[in-house]
Amino acid sequence: MIKVGLVSLGCAKNLIDSEIMVGHLQQAGMTMTPEPDLADVLIINTCSFIDMAKKESIGAIHDAVDSREEGGRERQKIIVAGCLSQRFSKELPGLMPEVDAFIGLDQITQVAPIIQNIMGHRTGEEAPENLVTRQPRYIPDFDTPRFRLTPTHSAYIKIAEGCNHPCSFCIIPQIRGRHRSRSQESIVQEATALVASGVKEINLISQDTTYFGMDKWTDGRPTPRSGVDSSKGESLSTLIRALNAIEGDFWIRLLYTHPAHWSDDLIQAIAESPKVARYIDMPLQHISDHMLHEMRRETDGAHIRNLLQRIRAGIPDIAVRTTFIVGFPGETEADFEELLAFIEDSHFERAGVFNYSREEGTRADKMEGHLHHMTRKSRWNRAMQAIQNGVETYNRNRVGQRIRVLVEEPGIARGEHDAPDIDTTVFVDATLPVGQFADVTIRDWRGYDLVAE
Image 1 (cartoon, rainbow, N blue to C red):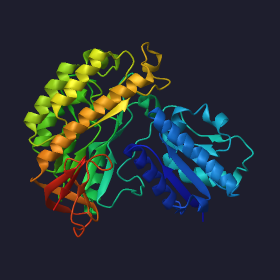
Image 2 (spheres, rainbow, N blue to C red; image 1 turned 120 degrees about the vertical axis):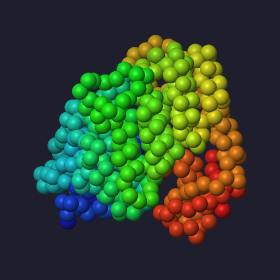
Image 3 (cartoon, rainbow, N blue to C red; image 1 turned 30 degrees about the vertical axis):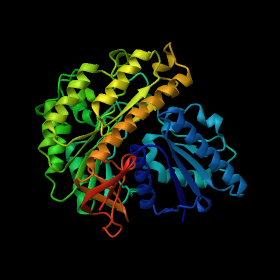
Image 4 (tube, one colour; image 1 turned 90 degrees about the horizontal axis):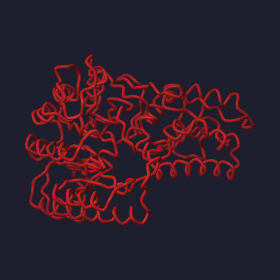
């Protein structure tokens, strides 16, 4: 019996790919082990979204190779999967000859026969097998074998794969391919099965959840700010309404939305669907028209400000989570000051800031006006301070409020305004049952976290 170890890096979208690989390995009769030393095969599912993630992935590969050599496990095979393999498919086999195989996004369902092949035929003296296909086309379905690696009460559903947006700082479309939506029926079937199994939180993810279904519309893609009319076919609005109709007590959480494709119909769908958490994740990246144009974000500052007003007016008690990029090439002090004022005035409930990461192969990499790293760091610090001030004010104002939480582990929970592994922790009574909802009263706050009883 072949024992397989897995190291999964990166975002929740990558985690689902890991879950699918584990599901197929178990279906093939292979055994998973949490101990890399005991594995016949070690899979490293990598990320390469930004430079920091790329370095982490490369470090994990080198650590695995060094550990194998130091432990005298010459027979152990190492497979590198995920975004790093997909992005650098031509370069990696020559740079990392110690790796036995490189696989991309299209090979995650084929991982079992790939392992059987390298276990049976590869001696370690040949060049690594490079099985990565150039343009990924794979998208999971409701019946795709999958072993969830999240807690039993929370799950992710990937509603689409790939991205059609031209953001100048982002390499994801080149890695993940063009946007391709699943069918609404497939997603509803998967969600229904998850709720029946006891899942209390469904997190909808893709590179852009608001683009769901639009790649199938016969009249083509709507222009930015034109709105999304669900009568044209399946959309995030129709999906939300269908998921809300599933029987059971659970949350539906929207992650990775794009401001260019929000509409009044989507706002109304959320407002009239009580199972949808009053929380949206919408990376805005900047507010300066100059920066939004250079970033190729398909929106401008006026659109963003208007959209936020419409969302807050249409969905009472909504929490908006966003992220920004500071230090982008050509960002002036005036651009940054406009962003800083926007952060301070908008009172985001949850937010984060990225220090611009120069990524080879992107449009931004070739731009002029790259800023000194100390300028970028200074702006990041100032923006983060503004965000921290806003979050602390928000948490202070929550003292005395009665909120519903989902208990993650003894003494630790999350509220409706908090996504898993990203946002605020709510400290609760350790006797509350794990994996269940509870109503608690906020009595105190500590930085980003809340204390309840």
